Length: 387
Image 1 (cartoon, rainbow, N blue to C red):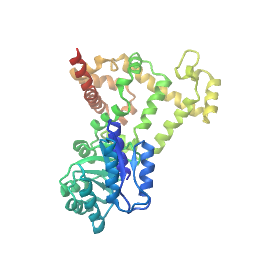
Image 2: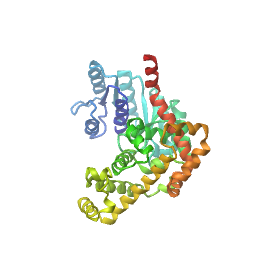
Image 3: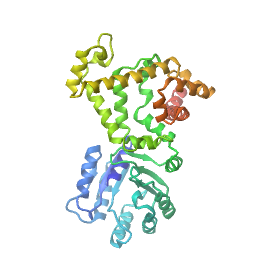
Image 4: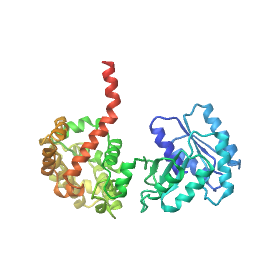
């Protein structure tokens, strides 16, 4: 049921007109769960507290949404085990009644190699079009996913990477195998970063950073984006060699970021913009006021200011080195060794090591540039045709 909501939200964000139908009458509270989920993500839904026939509900729901010209109608059916013959017969009846364009098999990654028999039982009953693997944020590596594909002859379309509705991403075989082998996934990381914090929407920030200017307000905005990235351990697992460093620090890292943001909420606009005469580190009264307003210790506020200073120094160095300008993109292709040397000179050695070294950063920059080109490709073409 949660995966159905994630699937619906993903397509809704892409511009599809999506609706959900609850045809799960076997599990107690299934309709209530779908109702709550759909309400949270603002997607229309259909279900019934009185009707016990899932086939009737599926037909009524699909017909109702088709009449309203919905482009994607997702029917949530009962979860079932291969030994439950009656539920498999029910699934076949639902499939025959509504004639779906795609039958999606949702598989829990934690059942491991046992999923082959489960997937085969599904494939023998209905024609499966695609597979979704869930709970890949846990200890399971998802090796059973390969068994599911072998049993169903259907491709994996999406993977669930967490409990939240936005922790759902398209499956990419190269990225999946790379992370499975502990080699990271810079391409996936670049894609995640461009989705959460699109750089084309931050031209003013990039312009200021190119001049070496990075205020507390800029830091606050970037921390907001970081909290939207999801699990820090999941992000670190995408960086080759950095996965082990994040082990056990997930909650502590998010707590620290949120604590910094609460402190910055207690600052005035002038203080956030680091205007002359309003610097907190030079005024004890201001520092104590921010500490009191945010319920923090003055030393914690000093820690925030030191972190900001560290980032500001790094941004200033990168701005002077030309890494924040368009010329930096040209150098990235013409002379990558020079760019790598500049990165080593500009960045904090400890931070660079956490990110897997200068070579990793260089690769990430290339993937980010490629992701931006893909995202802006259509708009560039349309501009050219208009001209």
